Amino acid sequence: MNTTQKSGPSFRSTTCHPEDVAPADMQAWNGLRAAHQDYNSPLLSPEFAQTVGRERPDARVVLFHDEAGLAGVFAYFRRPDRTARSIGSPFSDYSGPILRSDFDVSLVEILEAAGLSAWQTTSMVDPWDHFVAERSSQHSTMLISLDTDPAEYLEEQRKKHAKRFKNFRRLDSQASRDGYELEMRWGAIDPALKDELFRYKSEQYVASGLVDLTDTQHSRAILDEVAESPNGFCISLWAGDNFVSAHFGFRLDDVFHPWIAAYNPEFARYSPGNLLLKRIIENMPAMGLREYDLAEGHDHYKKYYISSERTVYHAHVTSRSLMGRVKSGLSVFWRVLGADRDGAAVQRLRRRLDHVSASDPRFTVRLRDLISAMRTRGIKQQTGPHAKTDG
Image (tube, rainbow, N blue to C red):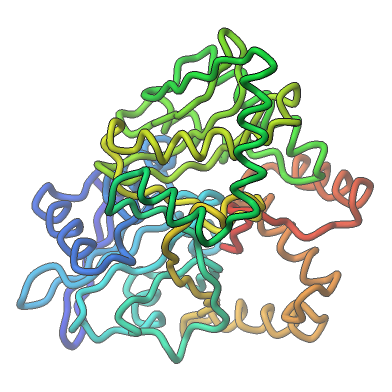
């Protein structure tokens, strides 16, 4: 156990590896999450931090205690230059400190308590508005929150998007007329399905010119670790023995957060993502699910099924240390080049570099990816639910 402790004017901080968090603190951590719906993501849980931290010696958690008990938690990957990557990067669709509503602390103070120089993210949750002065732009993620009967839920969505649902029904009927009897399966992912799903996803990444998260060192290690854990969960759609489409990711209790979504191109004409998602909603009670988190992906069909959203923020904060000031200077340099201008080539370049850096530590892989991206799509902006800037 490698633990460090520091004291502040109103709190005591303890930094350790996620697997060294005491059971009482794990329970209190989940208590903090239960206090606000925006914290109700499996990716913000101690179970997730411990799972992805098993193969990562650089995983850390800083816990803040005061007279009332556990007041805050921040989980991260610690880089050699003392910068933080959000825990689970590049799959950190939600990130940031989890705080008690009355705990008054800034992001800078959190970094300094953990001995960090900088942290950058595009996925910070801030439900209590603690970090208004330190956060920047915002966007929303997409959620299916099933608080009613699935048939009633789908009928409400149909009323909102009647034209789209009419087309979805047509495609579903066409699959039946073509002789396909579709079947849902769910549970732990078996090796054969994992290989098939990741193969299709890899082909889609490569064809799109995106970072192949199924084949880079850090990202693949996370996927493999989650697949082997009790929290690894997969929902798939089949036509007999033929794979149609699937979602794989991390589940905790009644909330599922998929990362890998892929389909068999042979079924593309039927809109396999729609075929799967409609049946997922119909079967959520049978699967014991209440919330299905679709993050911020750009798959066009997702928006027709969601019922709620979650706000996440961009933040780039540096400590007052020497290394923090160096990181702040580098950030200014990027801004001068235009990295803060939406759509600018230098912004796309920086995001791409950050994304592949979080996915694989090897320089040769990063260089190969950059050359491939420039050749395939001119460093087209990484899009989708895992385009996190945590560099």
